[in-house]
Image (cartoon, rainbow, N blue to C red):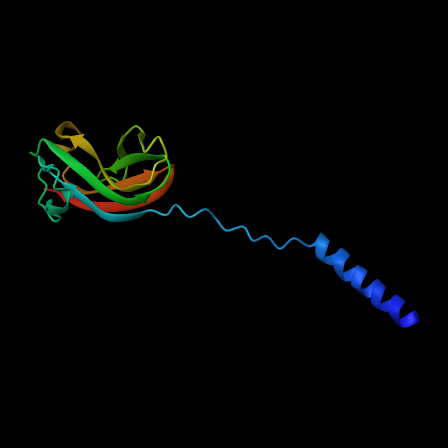
Length: 148
């Protein structure tokens, strides 16, 4: 009898302990997206063949515009994209306003988005430049380029 009481108390203890422990593991949210390409160019393809844009183009201070073009894959929710352009002195020259993509939170296999900077920003600022692309306020990618 004493043995069965000990077994009963042991089983009740196990049930109570297990009901108090919750081993739920929380993983950080995976954005799920990736970048297929990120280029800086002095032109956009009029036929939307962005994959064929020359990746190592020589950018000149006389070019009318410079474009930062990024192709992002596997988007499942709304994303706000913004660009930060830095001149040779490492100071911010232009911050683009946020561009919202996929406002309906549908699944998009990919999207191509770009920003541009016009000649007045860089005509007198030859040298090493960089552009940072942010997604939802977090770093997405970075590209360095030279303006000749």
